[in-house]
Amino acid sequence: MSDDDQELDREIESLASQLDDDKMDAIARRLGLRDDEQVYRTQADGQCSFCGRPQAEVGAMVSNGAGARICGECLASFRSS
Image 1: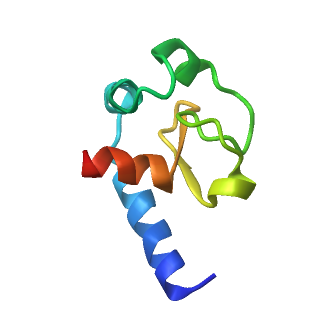
Image 2: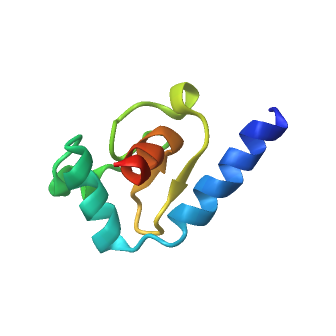
C-alpha cells in the first residue's frame, strides 16, 4: 500500500468516525445508491452498505458502529456533492 493510499485510508476513517446513523442515512439518500432499509440491513462482511461492492474491489471501508459500512469512493462522492 502506498503512502497516498494510507493517507486516504486515515482520512476516510477520520471522516467516517464522525458519522452518526442520521448522517449515514443522509449519505445513502443523497447518493441514491440504496434505500434506508437496505443500508441498515446490509450484513454481509466486506461489502459497502451504499454501493454494494466487495472490499476486494473498493479497498478500505469503515463502519459507523451500527453495521453500516462505507467505502472511500462513496464517502468521497458524498463529500464532493
